[in-house]
Image (cartoon, rainbow over all chains, first blue to last red; front, side, top):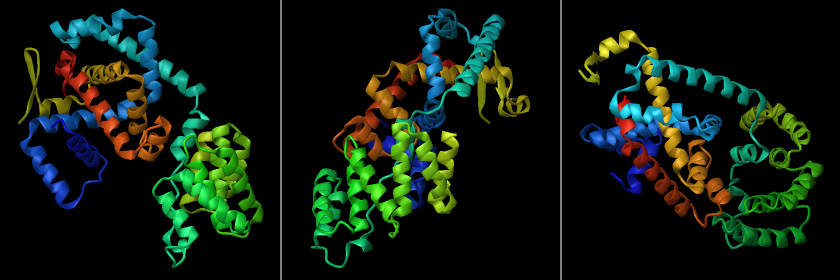
Length: 254
Length: 101
């Protein structure tokens, strides 16, 4: 039960990614394997709790205050007598809960996700569509796209740079080059920004809206919230899935 | 019928269902969640970052880039190692046995 495959299967099961025979086999295994079943219950409960970074920060702060009464005595007590059998302990726990809720409320009321966090949450890898690569898989564009597919983003960028130099008006190449910059580690946002601004200014390609989205994300990362909001509102007005994502991000920023 | 023992008292599922979310169950749940958080905070900084991004449903590609890892497979391996360590820490704590569901 301790191998990576099992943990991956649990993750897939809990995220609803398992289907068909794989799902049936896993559910059968769950029925006959109580240890696995307990592990699934633990991970299912644990995951959303630990996704709450604010509550984690709060817990860290509380531990930092050195309040040994709340944080250490409960362990000692639990080993001897369950905490809920002692009325004073229940009262203390309820008090701790109330204090926690007040602190969480305060944190929620005056803090937001950082630009980097919002960027990371919203940035998605752009897949260069096969149909845009032409019929000739040996073409320079196709070769650059293949490097991009293999996540060799720096080499892909070099290949797209050559192509763009030969045809500066090719907005598809400009967009793919911008993506190659953004996917590098660390992302070359300044270079990508110039390209995306050019595509938006050109205004004649199907990549205008996508460029606005990615440029807005760069602005979010940089903390230029107003610039980001201006672009996101334009994307939101266009509707579709990207428009919905833009609306969600506007809400987060506002 | 499964039963859950609370010291000398044993509550059936039906009784528990009738009681609903009593303060006792709330306290237990809260204690369990705090145990999860405490064990998470015992992990190394890298593990905390990886798991935090994973629990927030951030894509593996992004986690790989943020952490500066070389490949997706290595990122998945780190996620597994960290999660395994966390689960073992939780399960090994006697408090977890006391507070179990």
